[in-house]
Image (cartoon, rainbow, N blue to C red):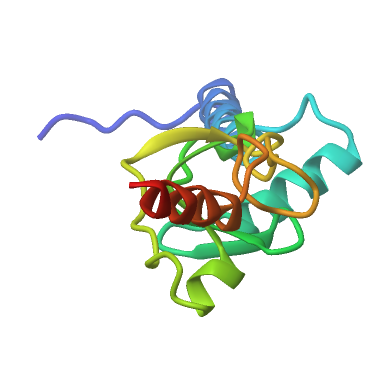
Length: 150
């Protein structure tokens, strides 16, 4: 039977130091995973947390972007929300025209990337209407005058 070596004090210290190093390495890896926003100040961290909470996958956001224009955004992916980008589908419609039956409810657009700072901008007039500055009422008047001239 081979004789078992006794651990000397030096080998015990080495094993102890090795365990300490393992723990420190595990802590560094854990901290690195937890602190992906270590370069940000407190306000930026709060903004990122709020964005991750507000822009979740499958959620529909709605906001009036003009007096009678409502935009709905269906969030498909929020993987790049820390960069300020989401992937979603947009539907924009004039609530008055839809409620009076002048136009049908629009469908969601195809999936595209949206910048959070730009997704609520409206290119049209503040009173609503169409993006080019006209209204459906103007178009219906033009159609009526065209049909009466024939």
